[in-house]
Length: 188
Image (cartoon, rainbow, N blue to C red; front, side, top):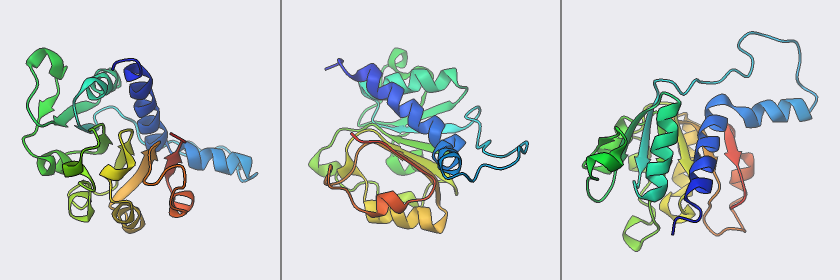
């Protein structure tokens, strides 16, 4: 325990930043020779300041993500099995239900442990609760998200961007990950 807390929290914030700013699309344009003239909003993306970050799982990693996100001016919310002591909340607002958390999450970060009762818990019904165009980041385990539902939510515009370093069946991941627009993908 704790040996990778900071590394995973740093990675989570990288995925949040990269997803919000659209860095994967910008890099693909550069690598593909499609970068043209400068424009004031080209590759600008979204600022994190004022966005509501929902953290699902406020253990060591979730708390470390909360501390980092606060420094970027994000408003942190969380759902956990139980509410944390105030000194471990780092100013975050507790939500009794995952559904309540999802409904206010401009950015939704999965930090929960992989347990049988949580497998597939981020499903089509729950993804539909996110504000339109929300960002979904997963640094926990691939089996917590129903990947088919996530792909559909991106296709339908419910989810505007995705950041992930965990997948179902890794390292043999679903080929649709490579076709997913607005996604920052890293190997676990």
